[in-house]
Amino acid sequence: MTYRVGIIGAGALGLLYAGMLRADVTLYTHSERQAVAINENNGIAVRLTGTEKEAAIRGVRIEKADFLEMDLVIVTVKSYQLDSLEKQWGEIPLETPLLFLQNGIGHLELLANLPQETILVGSCEHGVGKIDDRVAEWRGMGRTNWALYRGRANEALYGIFDANPDFLFLEQVDYREMLYNKLLVNAVINPLTAVLGVSNGALLHNEYMLELLKRLTEEVATVLAREEAFQKVSGICEATALNFSSMATDVKEKRRTEIESITGAVVKLAKRQGKPAPISETLYGLLKGLEGEYLQ
Image 1 (spheres, rainbow, N blue to C red):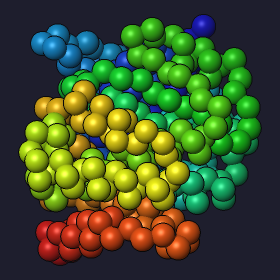
Image 2: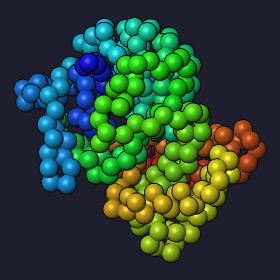
Image 3: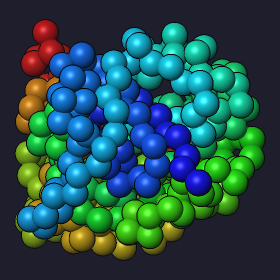
Image 4: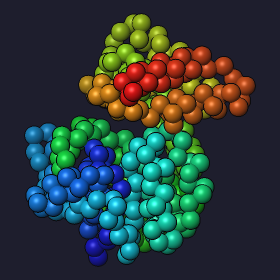
């Protein structure tokens, strides 16, 4: 059986999922130009270690989206872009499951107010970059962890998630635990690499950066109540040593970052708990300051 999947957000992550899911995929784009490029070339491509996998999907500008008869809608836009989709939330049928793939935990507040019956959240372990409007480069193979926020997973969802053994989806029991584990990594690696302008591996191989990494990991782990935190964070740095975090890339290319839903969320939690988080507060201020300069 062929399932129908809609993906909102045609950046690097949206292109990767559109290219790797074995389903009838419609990719909803921000620009008409990208939708035209996808349709004129009969789909998109995902590059991996010198090879290129073509995928025959459709591109539709988000303003023209029709979500009827979709078995799943995946949302891959950045957390700060979610508020701009208010019109679309009202157009997606109540029975259509939604899967949100944002960094941090800032999007949880939005989910509580959505009308859809079944909502899932996920954390993505893949490394991916966008080459152009229709080509993504898969730079690090991982998996997609997902968990129910509310509702229930039906046969179609499992059919979609299990269809491609080379693109793994792993179900988790507790969505908050799953997101906090990912937030630990993101709230340490992303802001440090963004401010320092270095790859993930540099945080381990420079003694001064390593000391910062250790101190920030301890701080964030205390706020999020995570155990064996440095082992987890350093393991990700080692496994993705040559990669630049999404936040480091955003700063380099002078784009808005997800600092609010990542480090900002840690700072808010720390204040709520009455715990100090001076390094996180400093990094938050530095990155908001950088954004304020280049986003003027």
